[in-house]
Image 1 (cartoon, rainbow, N blue to C red):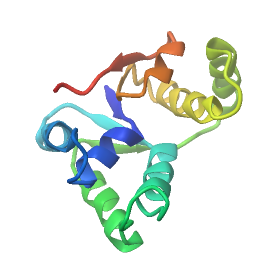
Image 2 (cartoon, rainbow, N blue to C red):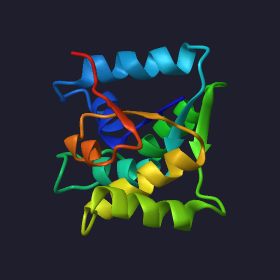
Image 3 (cartoon, rainbow, N blue to C red):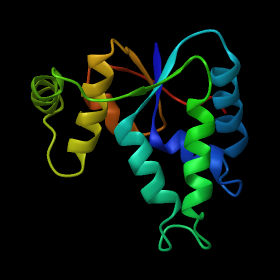
Length: 143
């Protein structure tokens, strides 16, 4: 199973991004494919924060539009929202130690931890910080 990181969602949503065509194609492939895939809860919240932020995008995406993007993705029959469960805190502690994470890297640790909770072994991302976590394979976006 593969999960999708925030940057992929942002690239697919914002047409002005150079990675937009590749990210859009990757998400369509996942959404229309037969293999299960996931979106960590933390990715959803970070996506909403980033695309609606007026200091990041001018103009920012309206919140309703950003929420509709998430709902459309999760309407795919093969998509799953990855929510933290009872094992999340111990997995988070392990993942923080694994990546020697502090500061902003704690969010990456939480994403990896929720992926581990669901048995997700791969993460579609262009964020090189995830290479700090040997428990997940980083799958970069194809150009």
